[in-house]
Image 1 (spheres, helix red, strand yellow):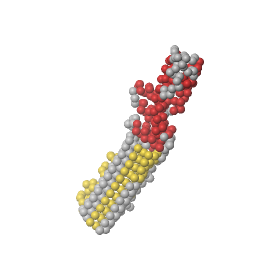
Image 2 (tube, helix red, strand yellow):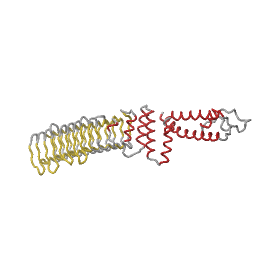
Image 3 (spheres, one colour):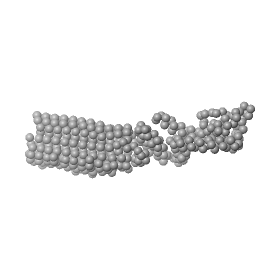
Image 4 (cartoon, helix red, strand yellow):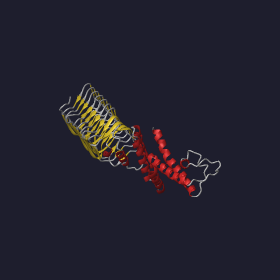
Length: 426
């Protein structure tokens, strides 16, 4: 019991208790310590109590409980203050880690190093103030991690790095959370929601290769730096598309549900924010999700936008052909437009053939000329009504027949792929 103790060794170690065994709690609550506290590799059969303690470290290291085993909670609430680096690398906590309203100060360096930390319960950092870098790489947390109302600052680099972290519940950076510096969650797994509601992040946010039940970034989210979502797997994306920054990386991102899926124009503007240019996967993923949610028309609109964006990076000749496909049949994703062209060609050519019947190859054997069926025979390349083979047009009728055959093949090659994709989705 060292509660309220005043321990001073500013240039070195104030408490050295490596591999200490305590059959109860270890209490440093309200202690004032100048120098390093070392309880490296200790076994504590109860809680580690740091409430209202004040630590000022020697040589930037203030508190070291690496590889310690704590059977209860680690409690650093009610005014815990640490100047320098606190270290919990490889520490095993059978309860929870509570740093509510704690103040950590180590500008430009690490305030908390908790690599490979194992916490059976939760990590509570509500109202935490950190001037420096918090590192939670490869940490394992049984339930949730909460940073409600926390304020993190480290303009030199990240305020929070959690690569390879695994959380059995939510990771909540919300409720007035502010990060003045980048954050990294690369390759982390969050079973619950990764919450960014009412959060402000000034700097780069890396969500690359994360696995999460849900990611929430609503209208009150302020993300002013680049965001990396590449190759992440999210079950529910609950966001406001307009809140994502203009520098966005989406290649390989997959999601099952969109909480705010429509209007389509907002989602297309979201895809257009990808700074790497045209990539097919984000469009395909959005179209797949729309189809799964029953928005087939929206899925076709996304695939049409995909073709248009791809066209922008093609050579001039392909761009011209793309514009023709777009204007005529919408790359096969505008079936009504293609049907209108078919009806127009059918009526025009039928009237032309009816006014001047073409000659039959063998008048004695040829069927009666039917202008409508003859025109349909020319336009539809996969169906034969016996008119095209029996009639031998001459002059301008021959050119008309050739034009109808070409138009029929163009319509077939542009409409058929779209119809095939629509039927396969159904």
